Length: 382
Image 1 (tube, rainbow, N blue to C red):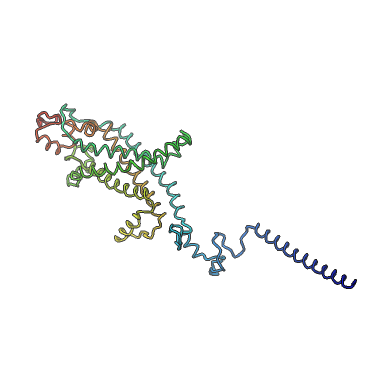
Image 2 (image 1 turned 30 degrees about the vertical axis):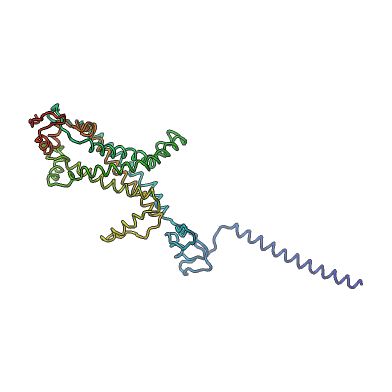
């Protein structure tokens, strides 16, 4: 009996020693693993640029590392995989093009845009100081001639008013947090920006209507003509020799017309793409079309890249048109005597018409009526 108890005691002791040793090994292994986990220094054969671990080293000896650099590079470029969920965009694990877009959006775009805006304002101010207001050389005649009909003026003011609203709300998106936010505070700026967002989205459709009305009304008067070359060579009359011949629109106004029409169309299309994200692959199709003329533009664009191109192009064209329209507003208001009347009342002084649009004025005076309906005698400008 005693021998049996001693035997059981020895077995228990052996088991206890084995268990204690096993626990010591586990504890030692766990401590070592924790210490290794806290050591952020990568192994000697690792690549410090980071990347997803793979099943085993798949890189070449000269590159080193413990993952496939080629695969990671393709993932960084936006390589798409296959997913079973409805949102196929989830198949793109990494799309680093967003960082490139962000750098452009917050760097060169607003910086050069500010240079352009300030440069145009400064140039116009300098011109006004040196040249002053462009007056009517022979003075106002006191009799008027109709320049634009009510329909023409409606299309113009619809286009002009909507563009000003879009320009102001768009400039707030680009510069508001730098200029307006420090002045009005976060809450007021948030309200202004939210209101501007809705205005920008819906007033854009009024802009499209005004653009179409203006195009259909004036396109026939804005085709190029050989006399336009003379107009440019003489600087529209600023270089001396009197005002060059011009019909209803001179060469400068024709250039403005086509810039507004083509730029407005581009803004409308890119704006629609921004309003309907991931629905209109306009840039992929445009790039494919341009590649047919020898360009080498990417056509395999992701949905996010389409939106990035749309926002960038929309901003660039909007800034260019805003800079141009600032000059147009200056000339049509304080820059030239009698110019605002053309869109204000629709009638202009006869002497003004003879000096700036002599060929058109002759045609209108030949019809025998002035803007007020009274007989108009084709008297000389002086």
